[in-house]
Image (cartoon, rainbow, N blue to C red; front, side):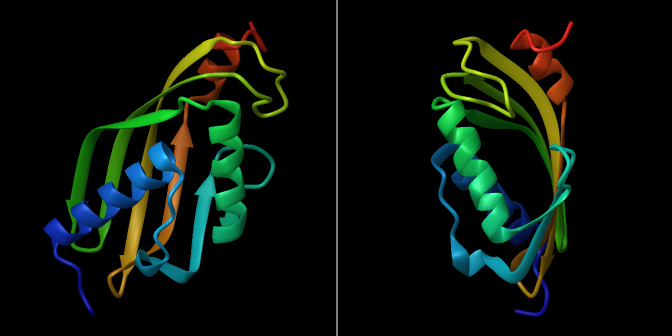
Length: 139
């Protein structure tokens, strides 16, 4: 598929986003072989699919009730942006912080680029300072 319509882009990105974060499911036939994720999630800012899968698994282990709710989705032919709210209760180690049992609620933005009908690239920016404050890691 050479181009992706706005409607196809929104559907594909929404299903991918919700499947990954709310169910831990990566559907390989919608992800490009050279998929890369750019984040503000620590020292490593660019992730391969395998590294990103590991990050998501770790986040879902630390926050077993992790949920990302899309608040807005804006799509064009081949690109989509999701503004979301993430919630969860920290039951395991999370970014080096021992379990606290505390709930977090943060906001973030994810931008996706499609190529040939597959998700080729993603950018995630989230308010992790707010999460660190909610977990008592920083003042």
